[in-house]
Length: 142
Image 1 (cartoon, rainbow, N blue to C red):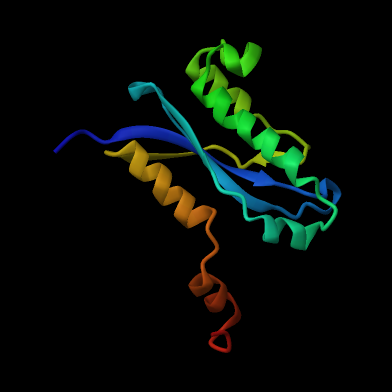
Image 2: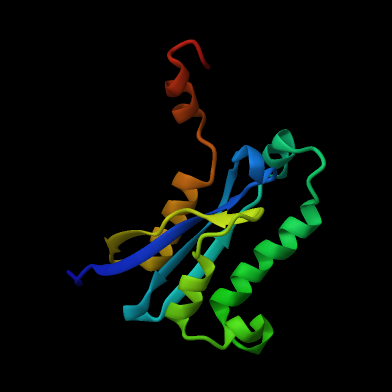
């Protein structure tokens, strides 16, 4: 059995109206320096975002979120930030901001399969779950 790998992750959020502090989780960033792994998975539920702010510029949101994936990949296409080390790019991505695109605090874990962890976190933290919503409100929900 392989040794578990330590990894860090943060949830990517869109905060349509920063002053109201409402947000929708739209992705996950996972970093594992031991394996030189830095990846983001992003899935935007536009209907959920528009429910918070019908005037939200979705094209702008998609452009900013695409930049996160480019920064994870690194290289010249990601600009000056893309030239930083993988670990420095992760820290830049998860630095606190008060803009429309934010990340959660950094969390840590251990795993044997980094791509599987990325998918698991996306399922758990980004995809809405009717079961968890129903349990929040009691048995009256379908």
